[in-house]
Length: 255
Image (cartoon, rainbow, N blue to C red; front, side, top):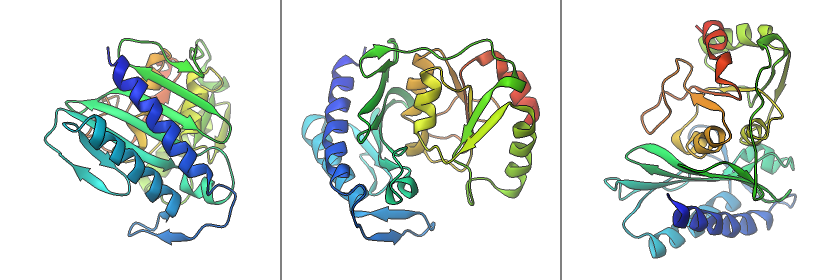
């Protein structure tokens, strides 16, 4: 299921990654968007390129992208694009940013790609298949108690509201180790069994849609902080677990 679409998504990632690398660790103008988040020519060019490819090969599909919004919004199948997830990391030369590509069917993610073009690392997944890292199956880590768990979060100013920060702080006090400024790369690491939890908030559809199939296809669990499945109408809180058995303790901390 979705084999042809996944092959196409990898071609999108190849094209976008090549575009992005022209600008990485080179002088690039940075603009501030209305929400104070940065954007560069690399973000805009990569998304425009992917949109052109989708219009040509999948003209009946909708598109949602961070830089150019929505088109053909009534379509059953919708491509969701984040040309550079982690623009702050990108403009400071840190290779944890990624190209994110997802396909939604009736609002639910059924295909995902996390691509880090500089390090040449790619996680891919489709509904009904296993998550692959550079073509090889990966699996999340199981059986780690919460007080020994490794947690990542992009964190930083603007990710959490005041109330969300208080709830996150409780969870952080109960895990074994927390690291920050990870962007989408953290979800790849979780899928590969390196870490156990990613906890974030303030996220948009294009930030998390591609992550869901990748984490779930590796045996992990993704939801909002209340345990609801992630889709087009989610509230922006995002929780990824390598082992779903941790959910009750994590959710209690985040109440």
